[in-house]
Image (tube, rainbow, N blue to C red; front, side):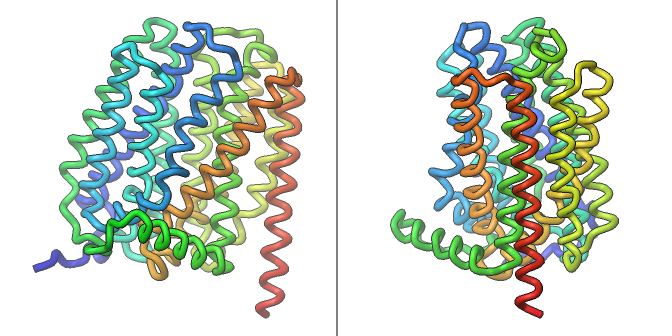
Length: 402
């Protein structure tokens, strides 16, 4: 007999609590590991342009596995899928900790992350009702950002003391995440019994892509979140090169502290979005997206730590207010049309393709020797223009349907 739906359970149910704790630990490990791995390749004298390449290897796993991870999430209990994915992350961190190739280990972590993402977001629609979904996403984002905040700072600060200690903390975090996943009750799979033939899975995935991209609302969400996360990951690497130039500081900790300011801001922005935006009013997030680009331009011109902190907190607030409603919209409509796991997998394909393209362009610009402050200004201008274009397109779409 199948387990009854948990959609009517209180928002902070046992399931939601376990999901939030597991997500925090897993994201803590992800962010600590990134900065520990960056410190390691810096210590091993890899060139500057190899830093975004590390993240590109991670991102490529999302794109390659996109046709399969959504079905994987929907075919099994999502809590158990999250546990398996965290075991893969644990293995990748252990590879780096053992002194093997950091690019290889980080790619293995990427495989785990690619499998983890559709399950962690897809499970929200199974343990929270439609009315609670924006709030559940806000809690998920707040947990993630708190993990980014603490994980980034822990990874950078520990790496200044001992890179091995920083890597060891990542292994422990992933191990604790696996344990937390065990406490998520075993939910009924969303779509069991699907074919595992790779060709058929690929066709099913691209049918899901076609379905979501043809729907105006989900297309709006996919474009917006792809632009946001592509820009977000590029900003993270920009900070690593910007700090020595603008602030004259060469340690591993300072970029992580600045990254943490964005994380703090996103917590507040996500909370504001949960209170002020409903699924019917998602378009209200667009002005915040334009303002992100303007704030990044202002940030690139800063020369003091205090002003940099303030501007990056503002960037984070705007980011949380922008992205949380878009995630909720996609989960709500995607669950109905193609299944939550497939919807998130399609979203991951878009977001990680944007990341790969933006990181690739960023690497090329760095290799060409462009000044880092100019890169930051150009980056902010392009992002603001892109969201403005999305806003105009959304308004035109609304007029056509009126």
